[in-house]
Amino acid sequence: MKYCKICLQTDTRPGIKFDSRGVCPACNYHESLQSVDWEERREELKDIVSFGKVNNHSGYDCIIGVSGGKDSTRQAFFVKDVLKMNPLLVCLSYPPEQVTDRGAANVSNMIKHGFDCIVVNPAPATWRSLMKKGFMQYTNWCKSTELALFSSVPRLAIAYQIPLIWWGENAALQLGDLNVMGKAGSDGNNLRKMNTLGGGDYSWLLGEGVEKKDILQYCYPSEKEMEDANLRITFLGYFWKDWSLIDNGIFSTLRGLDIREEKPWEIGDPVGITSLDEDWVTLNQMIKYLKFGFGRISDYVNEDIRNGRMTREDGISLVQKYDGKCSEKYIQSFCDYIEISVSEFWVQVDKSVNLKLFEKNALGNYKPKFEVGIGL
Ligand SMILES: [Zn+2]
Image (cartoon, rainbow, N blue to C red; front, side):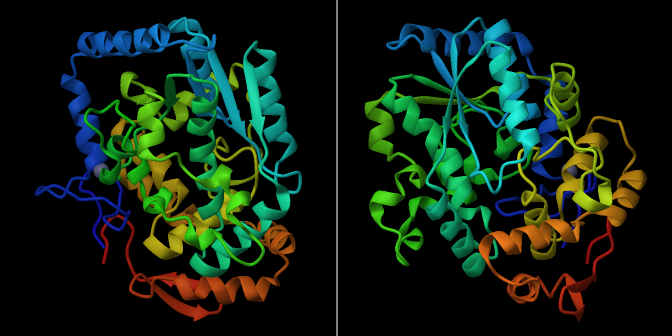
């Protein structure tokens, strides 16, 4: 495992490739922002906006997938107030057992600001059994829910004949998942290749009482469906100089976003502005840490280092302290939800722990072999 020479990105992130200097793609992208012709990018943005307006057949010229969190709140305001478009917001919501009051309040906050919003709720029993399957087979409960998250938006765009989808971050540029890279930095039509969408293979969802008719919300539209609908997917983050966790968090908090008050060692998040609408992404971040050697804190720190808000040394000490941390109460509530015991939880997680990166002290207790900032 190697660390980027500039930030604390590891080369264990799926889809990543460092350059010959040992620098990660996200740092290279950040460096390249210095020489971007923003005027040219604004022109490109204008073209995309006019594509949406010209192909508006339903009254909505674009659609935005929202969770009510910091990124989507900022995007929605930008599209409405700056681009002067008429967006339809689509929120894939969690079932009642999973969604937090804070999550519901944040979606209400957006509606209160005057947006039209459709909330999609896949059937809770199927949702739960797919989550359990994702966890028991891949140690990743989000595997099915992320499919639904990314698929529900283009599904509704097609159904409502809305020509344009805005997503926020281009994971290829801003994180380094190069599989997603489209024809240009703003182009999201390659999103189907992202690791999360698993190459369009949905067969693992079927069985144990789940039939094809139950999983429509989880299936990303085919290339043909997208082409027939003349659907264009674009990353808005590409057009912003200051897209970051912190900048988006500040913007949205000032507009009513409700954030977390837990401590960093409970949620592995230094400021409490991510995953506001449910509590179990935190444990998935812990599992990600045990699989790949980096968790959520790394994402914050890396941005802050690139933006000159933090030194690499200070970043190292934060990552050492909090990366991969998750309160036991969230592990317990997750186990209650998918009806397993906490020891069954750890038996499953144990299978996925990367033993090249971690030494096992006992079940559920792992010590990193790597040194943060230096690697292995
Ligand atoms: Zn880097």
